[in-house]
Length: 252
Image (cartoon, rainbow, N blue to C red; front, side, top):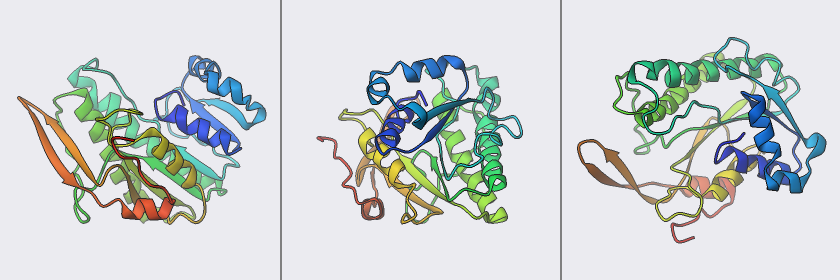
C-alpha cells in the first residue's frame, strides 16, 4: 500500500471509515505507510491493520489474509524503474508473480466464502469496444513493456478463472492510464482513480465488467527507434454513469 495510487486509495478508504487490512511485503513498508502525514492525521487505529506477504506467488499466500473480508482491492504487481531488471529475468520478475499472485488471491477469496466483490487494477485494456490488447509471450524490449504485459496477462487469467470457476463474488476491472496526479500528460487523475476504487465496493456497481478511468480522447505513446503518438477515442460514458463521477480533464 505504498505505491503512488495504492497509498491514495488507502486514504480514501479510511476517510470512508472502512476497516482495512493492508497486505505488504516487508516491515519497512508498514513503517512507510504509518509515517505518512495524512495517515497520522487520520489516526486510523483499528481501522488499519497490516499483514506481511513476502511473496505473493507462493501457493496459499493470501489464504490467511482474506478470511472474514467482504471486499478486496488488488493492486499488487512487480514494478521496476528504468531497465533495472535484466531481460532474461523479466518473466520471473514480472509475469510469473502477476499470474500466480492473481490466481492465489482468487482462490483465497473463493475459499473464504465471505467475499462480495474484488476490484482489480489493470492498464488500459480495450482498444475498441470489441478488441483486446493481445498477450505477447516475449522477449520484451524494456521493463515497462514487460510490466504492461504482466497487467494484460493478469486480466486474461482472471477472466478465464472467473468463467471456469464461477465463484459467488464478482470482479470489477478498473483500467486507468498513467496516474501522475496533477500533470498535463496524465491520462487518469489519482482523485478519479481512488474514488472509483472506493465506489467499486458498493453492491450497486455491476461486476465482471471493465471500466475505463481516463479521458475520452487520449494519447498513447509507443517508444522504439522513435517516439510515435497514437490518438485514441475512448468511450468513458459507462464509467461516469456507473460511478457518478465526472472524470477530470487534463486542465483539471
